[in-house]
Image (cartoon, rainbow, N blue to C red; front, side, top):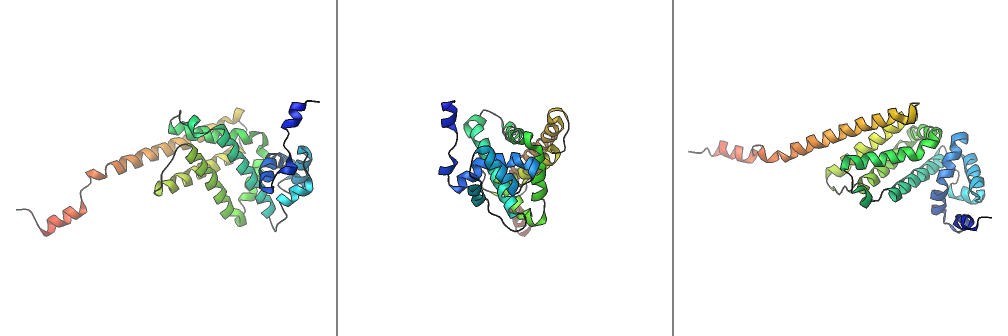
Length: 232
């Protein structure tokens, strides 16, 4: 018996329910490939990980409609967020240009879910249901916010919101391409991502040029003053 491996195994019994949700979310996502995002996936995930299924049911209690499924998807997305933060801390990203920081983070997320693309497809179908729209937007915003913070964004004005809304849209659109991409190594998805990031960088450049030219624009107050008190 490999004692080093055994000692490294997580002790699910000592975890809080919040910790258990995140810890077992990847196993649930893997089970969702075959079983869907439901209680069957919960039980399968618990058995695969050596956890108590009853405790996992407490972590993800049954809810009306797709509430339980959304809880599982929420925890799974949070686990991807956490893995991304651990793999790409700000100090590591600081070596890259801003464009590469964003591309790297989105690419990391795609690589993280590549083995379970069918589970991703099933999750997106649930998230697209009208009753889940508001929560899905919130989850997309949360991931986009983490990516921008890792990339070093400190904006607090309207840019804070526009950047996150745009990135959430890019990531969502890229995932939609990803789950239907049969190209070698998901090449079409990565090409799509590059084009979308190009669009964002062009927009940011245009916005910077526009705002930096503000000082060149005529002052409306000065202009009206001249109309009222013309120079002699």
